[in-house]
Length: 587
Ligand code: ATP
Ligand code: MG
Image 1: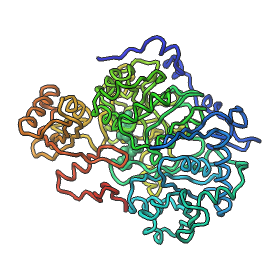
Image 2: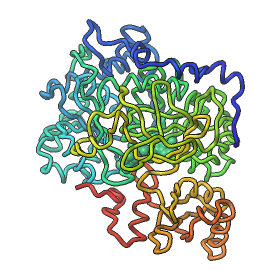
Image 3: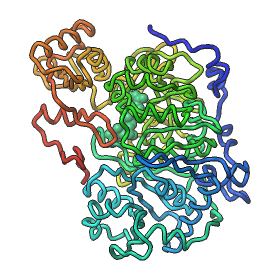
Image 4: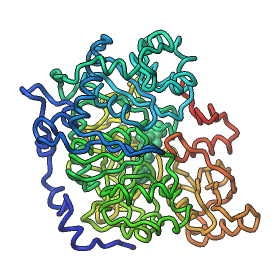
């Protein structure tokens, strides 16, 4: 089996030096000890751990907490002191609007400092915060704000006019809209407020009220890859898991420049784009740009990024843009690259080694788990294509159903990935779907809905979603394995494989691929790719049929939506296919 052996300095200098030893003895009480807690033993508040304690306890108010690189114009830094004051103003502003603990604040903002202030200011005031992705159209925005009972929305004038104004009457709970770019004194609509005027009128001092570790903090909606997006509720103590998981899996430490490329509209963008790095005392790099490959390489060099957390879709984009741009820059400060959110192919891990002289470390988790559960670590050898091993504090199992009961799968045998409960960042509710929430917990396990196998050394290998697995002639085919092979063909940019009903075999694999630039769709090429897959996978696993398409459907967070391809093959309805609500069947 291919293994990337880590050099000795990686083992010696990593936060997690001896994985096996730490894993064997680690407990959440140790993690909790990394938190300061509110003054006067008033509990645990995410915003205090991420912001105020760096000024009041660690005395580093003059260090840079946020560095914003807009598409054009100068870089803007915000120190911890400034962030503490701005978030205090925001929290006082919420008091002025009559908001109380547990009331919901939503934000629909481009990546700019006001968004970060809104997240942390809401948490200070013990409101429930939920981010919205700017790519959503009015339908998905309405669905999320309605189910989360949004009281305040923070957004821009343009986003308000184009996406929110029309649905406002259908959101009776939404009393205020804070517009980050509205001039003081200007009134757009009833309940609309100028952010600047509102912030200026508020005091920069705010004492956070007593916060229980179990108090509700955030609602995050899942990506909607397999169906209707689910609203996951997370509590303040989740920050314990964000903090330590970033130390273990991302090797993050105080003073680092940390760049998480995920949009703050998603869980990764909040948990790892804000809370984990700030609580660890790292500087958060915020890219306000459009994100072309050249800009990304340039940012890594000029901003001296130490730890970079990205996702497979972004890596695929960089891989497709060719190596020339990457070679124009140097990455001397880069210590660790990690990826999460979707399967990372072995090819992508090796690409990292070629371009950055560093492998890419895969991390596995879900919105529901609230923090990274399985990862490849800086100090441990990597098996390209494997998600790695569970983090200290996380007990992961592989379970299969036998005569209606869940039993452990054998080594290398496929089963559902299950995690022993509880841990601090585990979701506490699924908004509006109590039944499905309850069903995901069985015998002390949380069932993830992902299919994996564990090898003899404890490395986990992702096979696919339980719902996406192809059942053919009495065996299961994990789409990821087939897709990885298809993507090794030199002409293939991206691949998706689904199960198509078949009278003989129950289901057969049906592949969809897109081509790299400079390759033309042609019957000979189609057959060549099918042969390529058959040769490497054998007839049982290889797809029976293959279609070359110009595009594959993705969620707004960039994930492949196999369910839409399946619906296409079966001639079923595919939901809202507009660019703003791709496949969303939110009712
Ligand atoms: P929905 O639950 O609405 O269908 P989603 O599952 O894509 O959407 P997220 O919570 O954003 O929503 O994603 C978590 C899922 O993403 C995991 O359950 C897994 O299927 C996939 N995933 C995340 N990280 C990895 C990884 N490193 N390797 C393979 N799959 C991953
Ligand atoms: Mg999911």
